[in-house]
Length: 462
Image (cartoon, rainbow, N blue to C red):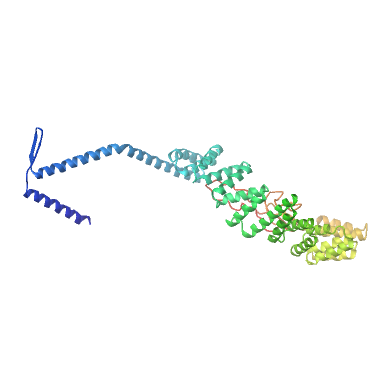
């Protein structure tokens, strides 16, 4: 396209030049004492030469005037190139674990790349790697003023607060990060773990919902976690005298985890206070049919404490009928029969329990009840002493064990009294090998991957 246009332009110029050459004409200019006489062609050539001279002069002036701006742009580009070179070197040193080199490169990169957020990240990480907490904290705090790095800065401050044991400050940083970015997994994990540890159950319930939505906590585990939180909320409502709300919360917990004995106990307790004895007994029977537990047996005994011993045997047999094959049902009826001095019935129930025992033999509870039976039926006999001796070496039977640390707890709690993990106490007979305990909160640095497994685990607590 340009070549035809150039040919046309050349043709036009040649035509004009030919026309002027064929018709030279004359031009006369008189100004004061000056008089110029020339042809049209010469005048046109002079005008073109003057125009070119003016254009050249203007170009020179523009170049001179633009020189400071171009020099500043050149300097900025040099600084930027040097800054990115320092940033690259710092990241490489950081990956290699060379704290001294990383800090040196960070000191070069920050003033050269003040407008690049990654330079602050490098500075904070290099300071952290070098053990300079004050410098790292200053860099993380500086990030809070920039929308692009505010969440990274909060994560760094959060990790430092956790390492220092300042859980209140750490929780504040995590909650602030969640407000800025609801999908920040580390913030949801950290907030949930700290809220659970602090017993802030209402807030923990909301955080658990977010954690389940983001896939941080598997659905089944989130369901059980939610049930445990509802049990604690029911306890808080009962402590404030709001028994109706306590019964509602415990019912929801029981619906989420039917095998969770503390949920049943809370609900039955609230129903009894509200005068709904029939509903309490039905709730207890349904729970016994699913997962018999000594706490439920104690609750049933307390509900019939004023009954005659023989009537107590009948109520125990009625409850045991909901799950007749369970060992707890045998022990429930045996204990009631011992109280009523029905030695034959007690011996029959305990005999079934002994017969069902495995190679390890009957549990300690069975041995103690057998010793009580022998002493009651034949006081001072050797059989009672033999069962007491067997109880010493007998397997302990089911009890609350922590899935996190493997320690035993005297009673159920939402948090393990030994390791502090949430929802890890399970009513079980044989201790499982303790799994490696997950850190209660995330302490990784901002450049490292997001933490996983933060929310304490627990699959089944009875």
